[in-house]
Image 1: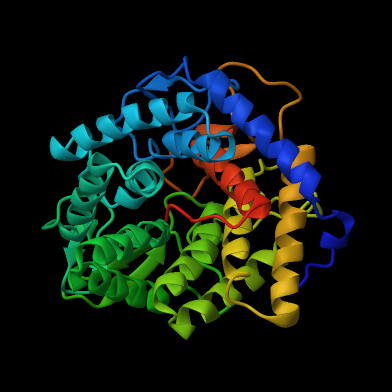
Image 2 (image 1 turned 30 degrees about the vertical axis):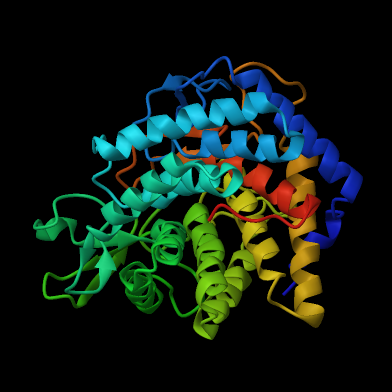
Length: 389
C-alpha cells in the first residue's frame, strides 16, 4: 500500500507532535480575541481569516480547534470561548439560520457534540440533536439518500455529495444518546447509496452524484473538482475518512473495504511530499495549487483505521499517517504566528476550472477545516483521543 515516493518523508516523532500541537494551541489562543463569539471565514484572504457570522457550513471547525486546545491545555479561556460558541450554534439551529442543507455534522460535531462530551453541556447536546433532526429532514426516500442542497421537491436538486459521509457520525451519535433507531437507519441507507454510486471501480470518487426523481441513479459529476471524470482531492479524502468513521459505528466490513480502496487510489496520485494537488488529476511537477487540508483529513482517517486493523496493515497505516503529518508540520506550517492566521498553509477551498462551476475562493490559503483536521491528526498522534465525530 505504500507509495513509492513516501520513503522520502520521515515519520513524525512524539516530541515533534507535541511541539506542533502546542504551537497550534498557541495560534488558537492568539485568535480568541479576534473572533470573540464569532466565527472564521471558510478560508483566509491573504493569509488572514476574515471574521464572519455563524452562517457558513464551515463554522464548526473554529470551535473544534478551541476544544482541541482546551483538551491539550486544560485552560479555562478555551472552555469559556467554546461554550460561548455553543450558545451561538444552539441559537442557529433553533432559529433555523442557514441550515437548509446537509452540513449539520460539519457544523455540530466539532462544536456541540464536543461540548457535550467534554463538559456535559446540555445546550450542546440539545443543539446537536436538533441538528441531527434537521439532517434527516433532507432524506429522500426515493433513492435513499440525504439531499445536499436545494428544494426537496426540485428534481434539478436531486443529488448528494461525497462530503456527506462526514455528516453521518452526527446521526450515529444522535441514535446512541436518544435511543432512536431512525437516525442510524437513515445513515445506513445513505452510505449504502453512496457506496454504490459515488465510488468508481478503481476506488476514486465523484464529488456529486445525481439521482433521478424515481430514485434510480443518474450520473456522477463535479462542482468542486477539475472536471467530472477527475479526482477532486478533498472529495477523495472525505471518502477515506468518512468510510472508516461509519465502520467505527457499525463494524460493517463493506465500509472497511471501501476505506482500503479509496486510500489505495489516493496513494497512487500523491506527489513526493504526500500532499496532493487540489485535484488529483495533477501529479508530481504540476504548477497547480496543493490542498494541504486533504492530507490532514486522510491522516485522521488513517489514525482512526489503526484502531481496527492488525499486523502489517496497521503498521503501514500508522507509518503513512506519521509521514503525512510530518510533511505538514515541516513544510506547510507558517514560519511565525500572527493574529488571524491559521495552522497549515497551501489549502484550496474552491478553484475554477474550464469544466466546473466554482467561484474561485481560498486558493493557496488557510482553510478552516484544514486547520481543524491538522490539529485533530496531531491530537490523535499525541494520545488516545475520544473523537467528536
